Length: 451
Image 1 (tube, rainbow, N blue to C red):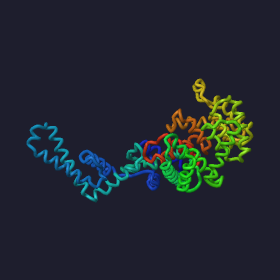
Image 2 (cartoon, one colour; image 1 turned 45 degrees about the vertical axis):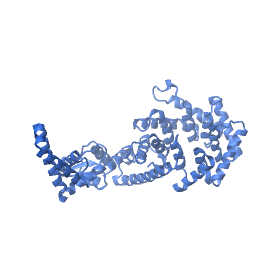
Image 3 (cartoon, one colour; image 1 turned 120 degrees about the vertical axis):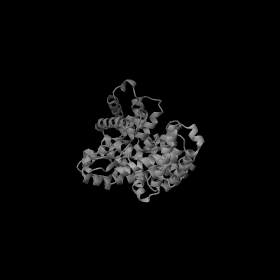
Image 4 (cartoon, rainbow, N blue to C red; image 1 turned 90 degrees about the horizontal axis):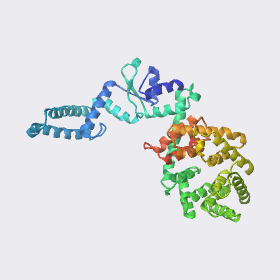
């Protein structure tokens, strides 16, 4: 079965509708994308689960379910033997208790029948693998058996639909190998993120520290130890991350800290104030020799002041972002101005009237390309990814610009990019509702997992 056909079948299963050939459903079952159940076993499992839940407040899979149900049965039988209960209760109440007694006796008999419980226990166990909202459904041409979409099938469908144009004629098994490889990498990544998060103790923008550490090459344990050492030396989490990320190039944490202090002092000597923003921007000089780096910083900042006005501290952040960009300061800031104009022109309908500040986005996009000609295409892609992130419910308007900027260079169509982000979120959240920090991490690393 190729991916085009698989996409149709999986979409039907997601809607609890099935129109499939026997060979196709066998392939989905073998790949773990669907589940099969006998309708009689399914009906029995549904009934039994209802009785156990109602009278024992537990599930069939609980090893204490039989004992709990037997205890409730004894209480019910004692009550039915009570003359006082029969005097004060209505006929309807008495009839209901008698029906409950019959149901519990039958349920206990089933729970004690090992042979009968084999298929029922299988259905109950597999229920944890069902896709959200999935129900068992039948296909007339296949007989009475029922089939349902698994959670893996649900994830495969979402990723396949976003990439169907490229994978339409590819065998499903081939696509699944790529999918499984990407998911395995995402799972390992989520474990690394959890380990890093457990060792970062900051209240504000904690995810930014985690993202910075996750970009450091090498074993996570080594990164965590280096971060702790740098934190002791710098006393500031963001500066500690800068030192850790530059340690390899500088010759160690202490040397990286020394170079950062030299860069900060150099900016102060040329007349910049020792504010937290300016001192933080000094990290961008570490990728250059000190003197040429300072000269480049000063020139980019001067040209940004010419473009956007003097006396704005945010221009130091912009300068820091533009330092590693390709080209001379004049070329770089020229691209920023072009990007700002393009962003205003390509703003979503109704947004221009609100005069949204496009400078941060313009700076980020200008830093990603090498020529003026590349500005309009990347701005258009940025706007498309913004719209797709909002449509998918991943980003809200307040954060969508930052999220789209993080993943604008991720390979693939906007739909593929957002599908990748969604898949990373699934692994990061691990069964819970995803949070803002999860989204920030997912968009920052989407490029790493694109396929």
